[in-house]
Amino acid sequence: MASVAQDQSRVYDTLAEAIEERKDLRNPLIEVLRIAQELFGYLPIEVQEFIAEKMNIPASKIYGVVTFYNFFTMKPRGKFTLNVCMGTACFVKGAPKLVQMISDYLGVGIGETTEDGLFTMSAVRCVGACSLAPVFVIGEDAFGRIDTKDKVKEILDRYE
Image 1 (cartoon, helix red, strand yellow):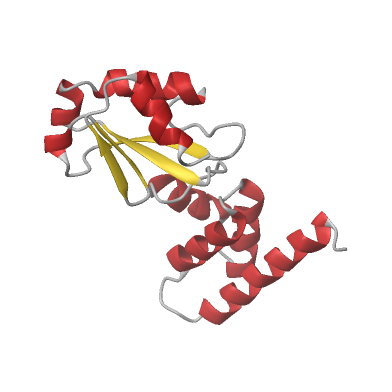
Image 2 (cartoon, helix red, strand yellow):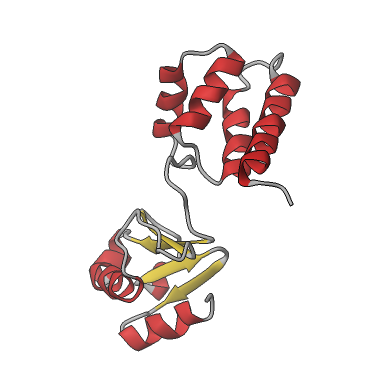
């Protein structure tokens, strides 16, 4: 049975191969970071330093790209990302209350991940479902007109 260290070593080897395959491309950094995040689930400093060394790029540049783009994260994310719409229509129709209900149920705030690693809650500007305000989205599924803790519980329990 392989140890965790061996598994981790294989993941770093896979990342090194991906970097080698893309090193001659023009500006391969975003693609390499995307692959690294796919492999590790997030981009901790150690992974950023590994990429910097393999690509001969300053670690500060890697960090700058990771922190600039919303897609990248330096913290592990849950299996499901729960995006609460905070656009004008949703905000006016109760998004702050919806955030509080979800937060109370999951025990996490915006930008945090549940202890079981199932959900990461995020706030987004608009999901384009204003007629259903307030809305939250999990994957491709949008849930609107959520106004009670019971509805929140019923929806989230489907994912557990």
